[in-house]
Amino acid sequence: MRKFILKRLIQLVPLLIGVSLISFFVMHLAPGDPTSLFTDPNIDPVELARIRANWGLDKPVILQYFYWLGNVLRGDFGNSYMTGQPVLHEILQRLPNTLLLMISSYFLTLLITIPLGVISAVRKGTWFDNLVTVLSFIGMATPSFWLGLMLMLLFAVELDWLPAVGMYDVLSGSHGPIATVFDVFRHMILPLTTMTILSLAGITRYQRAAMLEVLDQDYIRTARAKGLPERIVIYKHALRNALIPIVTILGLSLPGLFGGAFIIETIFAWPGMGRLGVLAIFQRNYPLIMGIVVFSAVLIMLGNLLADIGYALVDPRIRYAKK
Image (cartoon, rainbow, N blue to C red):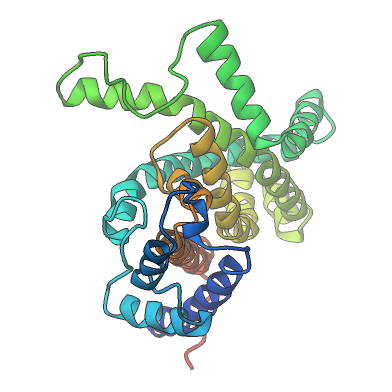
């Protein structure tokens, strides 16, 4: 297992370089550059040329990329064009907020989808199974931005139960760690609910299908023939094998979760890496965009690696060959 993990970590390096190379060139395909956002007609063209030279935008794109890559290898992601702050500093400031949303949504999704999928499979054809199926298809067809806006309209505008945007209530005057935690919890209810509902639909269907397939296996019929209680058959013998494909789906769902974070954080003004990325795209802030791309790619790749490791934890029969 250690050799497998080390090998996968080494493989991340060329993959990250490939992702950064493609992202860098795609980013420069858009016409113009960040100086095109300067709309003041009185700006001296010589001053604009000086700014472009300071930012390295006067060089060919391929040279810009290698200069950027060389700096990144030394731990320097550059400075934001808009604030002048180091890109690494801005990302690390926002990253915990994004991880708070994503990890909470991940665990909440697991806590809901696994029981729902198992019960739906065990009670196949009942009203409960039909209800879960209908709700799953509705969830898969619901756009994230629409759901977020509807939840905001209902619970923040009409009912005034929850805050609509932000992470803290600056004007509340609450102090102390308990008050701060409660304030953050109230603000994250709507974005967390939106992310979780959108994740529930597909994974619940996969869990149901995996459970149905396992329940048809011979060893399950043998366990029932031996007189084992149904609870033992379902949760000890069937569920563990049914979780194996779910581990795969959870690993593959990370890119969608990150993509959803960009939309959800923008809608709810959540101060995370996703909202920072959207602002960087609108501002043509190249160093910040590339920094967010690299960090997102690293987190997604590490998530897929954890999914591979999870195979062995779920099913001891799975062992990675030593090469």
